Image (cartoon, rainbow, N blue to C red; front, side, top):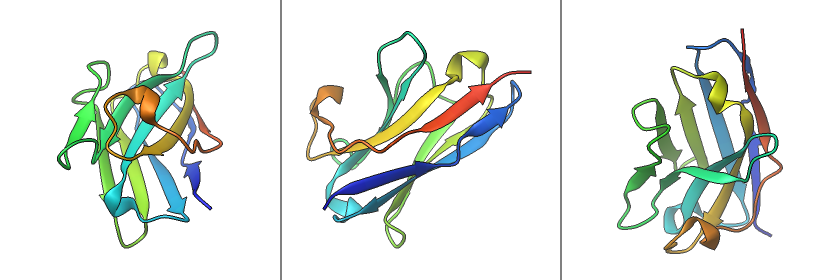
Length: 121
């Protein structure tokens, strides 16, 4: 059974950092894309970053480019999202999901339960 479990969220001041983890079970990360998404209160869920999304590359939305870094540890079957220079606008529940050869964010499935990130002074 495919399962994704997010962790690492919390409360951080503006300018701070967090490192989110997405632990996978029931499948091997090597052959799938993993995407990080977020949903702020009153807003739609949006994709922010993806690894192995196409030709093994990484992708970042403009809003997080240069501040967030996605990485993968195949031995631990885990994907990470290192978030630096956090802003209040980054406050959201963060989710990870998986897809096989995705062509858009809507191709992702098997959502985790999410982890709350709150950026506030």
